[in-house]
Length: 203
Image 1 (cartoon, rainbow, N blue to C red):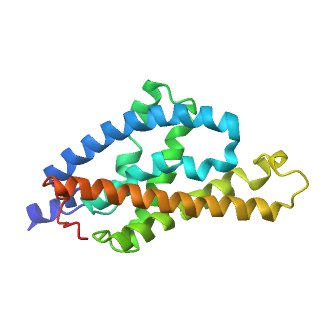
Image 2: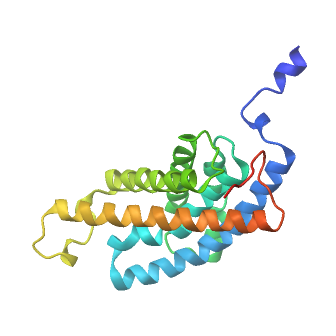
């Protein structure tokens, strides 16, 4: 009985296959997010951070994709955070705060996925989970950074509530884009014979 009980823990839910897949996702996402962060910084220098939720697709998608492919609690956060080391090695210009950003975005992916108990095996579920993910994550960013730090000069004389409307509209758009991208990747993997743990991606 003691031996059986000793295997009951948070990590015991993950199989060797899950761990290998998480390692692959950490590596691939770390490289991708590193270059995406460089590109995002350059784009935001041109158009400003108020377009940020749309550009965030390249970050958030990896946590949600992990939830789709592995389908177990906490996987979004577990995949997102370690990849930070790879991002920083590549030259992500946002510095050590990327650890915090990845934690928030990974946690947001887990929040979106847990609504459906990580059974993201239909497009509608993935789509809704993606929007929930973006809304959760971007609300944390607003609560943390505050809307007043956003560049109000982009909307001279506009009241703060318009910034909220603009920001959340883009957040929903970002969620839509992320959901479509993640579902597309999962369907592509399914078409070549790959299946996530205990998941069958359905039409």
